[in-house]
Length: 437
Ligand code: GLU
Ligand code: MG
Image 1 (cartoon, rainbow, N blue to C red):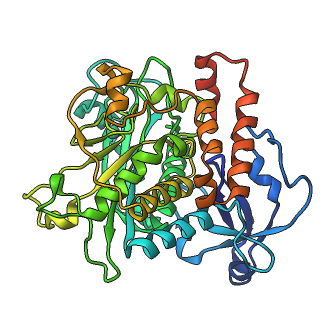
Image 2: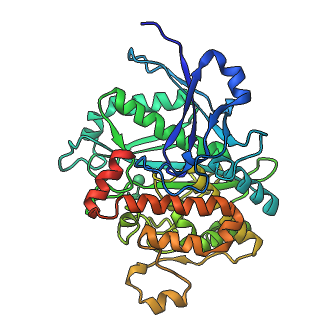
Image 3: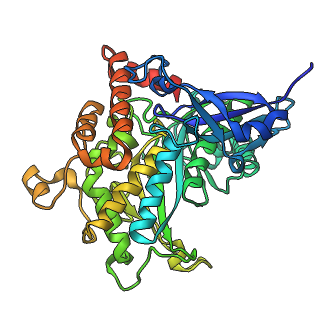
């Protein structure tokens, strides 16, 4: 069949869906300069493809300009078409970043962090997902036999990620039924979020092509396990040297690392609507699910909102290079750009305020009384998206960081999404989100 190969220029927008437009590959040079036309109200297309209340209406024109460094060309050698996509920024016609461009929002956040601290953020998003076709029986969690059933899929995903410029790290049959996890090596700054978008797109594509479709839905069944996105973070200084670890400080946190984490925890209830942004995300953020229910710091504790991860002397890498902490209250309904932007701003704020490093918790916070929790500065995270949006909209500081037009628009977007599923049961909502993510 005849073919004019197309390149898909993409954005990961407020809905966390990767959307865009394609152009003939042979026009690449021109398109990489001029971009493709984009419409402001597109940002109000919810994950269910309804359009939420839009401040832009039918007005305005923007351009989606690809960043050539992110281009992916992927031939799975299965006889199917070659996949081509490239990530980009949404700009005004004069080239200025648009207020609701998630990638531009992240760039601004990273700049702020660098300005206030001299630190550059390094990150890796760890993704859990599930096979859409339920086939697991008992005894499959982390099992060799169940891994074997999906080996071909895992090996193809790892090969495809490498081709897409991602550093594949591990692939595992996770604990939950039909659940898997894929991890990748860290990247600097905006590239870390680009990588997360690629991991989701590539894993999904491989699943579709192999007849083993997958879902990154935050939680498939309110009684089952959640699919988390854990964001591992560390810092390098301007020269690229590791700057996260201090062997003499409590729990190894350098002073700036301590303030950064304290900032995340202080503002966490106001930013969680950006990192866990679906109606069902809050069924996952409950105690004893190994996700996060409080704004606490744990040391090797998987129930903590932020966890200091292990370093091993068996590794050739120095402790300073390995040392990282992970934010566990994110999921794949969120755009990775907004997740990282929210974390970078909250952390930068913590450094600006010279917050003291948080105390590490070593007990089950769900067993403490509300008084005992508040005495120690812990809050239960919002328990619904509605509640999370109230806290986001009610904290003027977040609008100052991210931009008030972006936050106002985002809140309208999410309220539109909620209205669409208002009459559904929790199980029906899970099914709706599973169809999307
Ligand atoms: N599935 C858990 C989550 O929803 C995480 C389990 C783990 O620690 O890998 O975040
Ligand atoms: Mg996991």
